[in-house]
Each structure stands twice: as structure tokens, then as C-alpha cells.
Image (cartoon, rainbow, N blue to C red; front, side, top):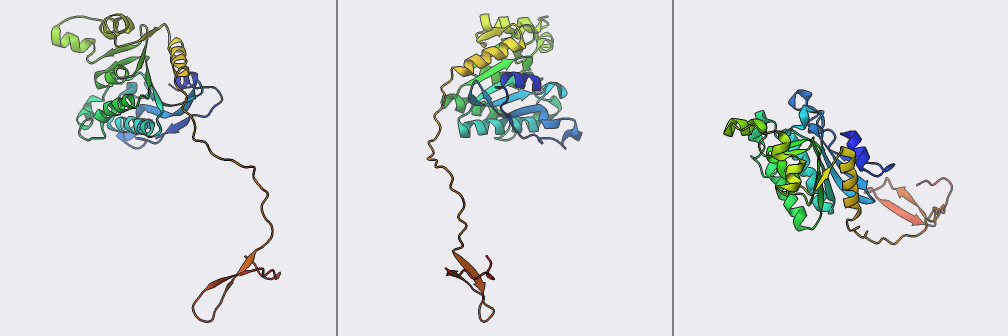
Length: 258
């Protein structure tokens, strides 16, 4: 995942990663970073929020703290009008903890709410489906303004082939059910089909390069001046009566100190 982020961001510009210690001591220490990487970086000269699933940790499955980390990243994007780029490669919600995903206004439902608010604010989002994105996570690329899918590896569906088999008895492949060809030519969920991950990232960078570059707040600046070395006064403390401090302008005796 780090290699994907490096390929997405402009070179030689620092990436401000957020919430790096999320879930560091939770879940027996088995889900470092809550299986998510989020942060602010520069893509095609534009400041963006990056959200990436770390498929090397539990297959990128979402834990309750993963959800909170994503929600916080989107909150920051809303507060600062940052476009969001989602690098999608996750197993959806971790089922043993699924009861904890929707029991609070700041849990999984708020991800969809925040996406809708960004859309209302006309702040565009780009999603790249690099792997399977299933169940509630599938709404993240589906609700993005621009959706890119990698052929033969990317897939988006609410229920995967095993669920279809269990529910209907039908045998269907992941690509037939929700692959790049299906979503670019049949359902219309996706906008672009990419032949590889690097091709998908190149498309994403080209899209971001066309975003409006927001104007920065003008700040008046002046050249710095050297510090003034002249002492303008001293502070004396009197022991008689109430404690007080008096500033004596122009008192330059050598034994006095600040």
C-alpha cells in the first residue's frame, strides 16, 4: 500500500500521515494503524486527503476503529475542502465486530454521510478499486465522483460470489459479478477501466490535475528586521509591602538584568 501511495503522490513532497497510532493496542495488537492509511498529500500540485486500505493487515478488513479513522479523515476533508482519493482494496467489515459498526452517529453510516456532504460542497473525490470492495465498503467508490477499476483484480459488489451461491445457487465469478467490465459497460458504476494499478494511478493523477486549484488566502508579508539590542527598561521587585513589579524605562545600570 505504501508503494501505491508513493506512486500517487507528487515526488519529493512530504506526506502528512494522520492517526498513525490508531488501534495500536486494540484487538491484541493485530491491527496496526486500524488497517488504514490516511493523510494529506500533494497530487498534481493539489492538496488532497488520501485514504487507503492496507490489505496486508487482515486483508484490509474494517474494524470499529478503522471506521472511526476513516470518518475522522473525511471530517478533516470537509473542514478544509480537500478532495479525497480512495485506494480501495479491503475485505469489508470484520464480521465478528459488525454489531459495532452502525451503533453510533460517528460510525460507518457517517462515512456515507460525509461523502454526500463533500458532494454537496462540490469537492470531488476519486476512487481506485485495486482489489475487492464488498458489502458496505462498496458504497465508497460508488459514491465517488470518479471511479477507476483495475481489470481482473478490482471488483465492487454488496455480496460476493459465495453469497450469490448460498442465496441463489448460481455460480458466478467475481469479475462477472462486479469487475471492471461489468461496472464500466453494464451497471455504469465505474467511469474508467485500467489495465494495471499504475495505469489506474496515472488516470487518477490526470483527473486531479484538472481540478480547480483553490486560491490561497492572501497574507501580507514583509522582510524580517534584525532584533533590537537596546534595552528599554528593567524589572525590580520590592520586598517591603505587597509584592509588585515596576518597569523603569531608560534605567540602563549594568547590574540590572531582565
